[in-house]
Image 1 (cartoon, rainbow, N blue to C red):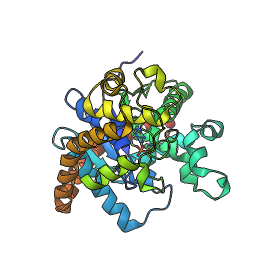
Image 2: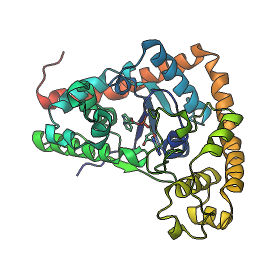
Image 3: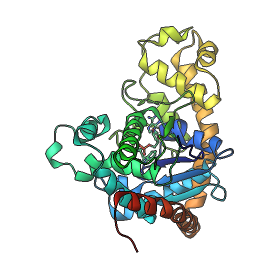
Length: 336
Ligand code: TYM
């Protein structure tokens, strides 16, 4: 069996409203991993257009996201940072994967079912084929590990299925079976308005999420208004079982304070929500405030961010070129 060198890839959609779930579930872990591994982080603008994006907004959001990642601690010198459309090899490989993946596999994707809702006939073909492009993002660099939040687990299982089928069909071990890296205490941050729904960029209520660009007053207001239940905070993790809002807010506190959930629960056992929410706000502001400020500072110089992304794009094209050549030879395409 071939062993593939460790390489980390992850992506994030520049569809606006970069939020606390993205930060705790993904970006914060990327910052830690970049110290020890080869990392590639991508703003997936081609995924973003599977639903309508205003062109000027998409460009602005892509820059804003890049600034957010750098402000959160991604080092653009040591880590490769770029937007997906800068490397056409993602889309090239995605086409081959469209011919490897089966309709039945894609039909089972819960993200597609949620996004398409009842109106399946009217969504873009791209939304359906989305996971094949995601597999291509990862495998065009033969990435071995992908740090994500829990909601992406199913897409990563599909990525393994595609790699395995490709390798089997052609009788060559071209691709690794990539492992998800899902760790930390906030792998699934929930909405502040409903503890059973994921915190998401696309929720119509801005009160459902903390955005990385929210200022102190806005963060305080959102936590103050966050849904709770009428009881005081529990003394044990077991008692959080049927209390999704308390569970979520304590989970956020634990993640921001670098505590385990048990430690956070012990800290607030028997407290009223009002007292806890005050401390949660102070903590969130102390962590997110500097990131938001740095993000705004970087946004003031779009030329600088564009240069970082262009440099990243050039480097990743050099990495994917031999993989695409190998795939084309394997599949039987003539190439110059
Ligand atoms: P996206 O843009 O929705 O989210 C980016 C990252 O943030 C994580 N995340 C969360 N984590 C915890 N709680 C939440 N409420 C929450 N919301 C989002 C996501 O798990 C993700 O890690 N399909 C991907 C983008 C993508 C990608 C890839 C990821 C495209 N190609 C290749 C990894 C590898 C997406 O829509 O993420």
